[in-house]
Image (cartoon, rainbow over all chains, first blue to last red; front, side, top):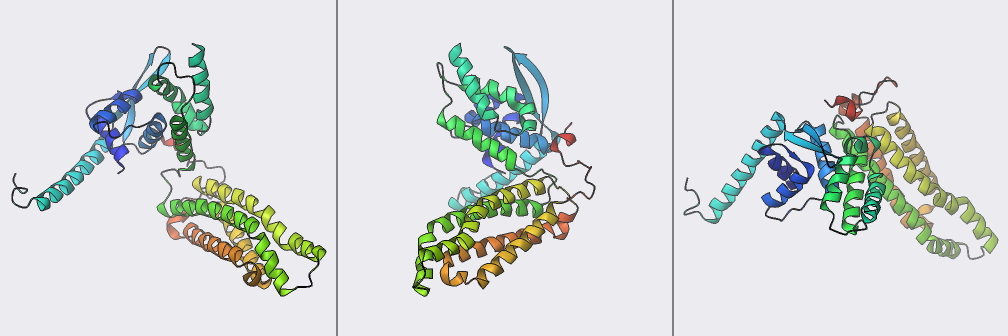
Length: 106
Length: 225
């Protein structure tokens, strides 16, 4: 899974958000390291919708413009959980090898 | 206010690069986000923004639908490679024209300008005209295969047949002696072409192509809730 995809799914993990909210959230989750642009975001959202990992939660009209809220689907949640577990296992392995004495605690 | 209108027009021009279906779904929303993220007083679309939108449009256009089996996806990717190589062949033919001429002259020192012109007309000019057409054919084939059109494989196999004939003709005309660079480029492309044909006619690809010309089940939008 690409990092941008992982961050978008993570942004939706706590609840539904609209496009602008996802952009801001992705920047916050990655501590400002990943700043998605609208073209990249919507190409990814379109693909994730097509793959059934996210879905449209609701639509609102704010100041005459469409605002669509996206949410994670069950399948999207499962995939994100599996990917997070994989990353965690890798990180754990790396840290425990770098620091064999204290790394295996917990 | 007029600044905003100008900026919106600029964004809309770029959004026009996206596929129609994508725009119907997303255009108004992306526009909202673009305007929301634009700096105060911004009048023109920034270079980075434009690059991002064009990249997104290319991705949306070139992406095979997700029902596409991996073999067909790989074949479609090879077709894009073929288009790029064909472009390379075109450039090679144009750039190496002078060296082809000196190779021919070295072999036949008595060649007159008129005779060289005849050789150029018969052998090099067709390549120069054909190459851009072939780029179009590669892209057209990629498009047809992405959609799983039932005739795509047959037409693609036919183009491979023509390419093979072309290669044999070039060899018969001593291309290896006079135009080695052109021959190397053409051989590389021929191998890409052959690999794509094998992928298209492999077993996992077969089910993707519609035997019925009226069936249109591969439209992505149809499967959306």
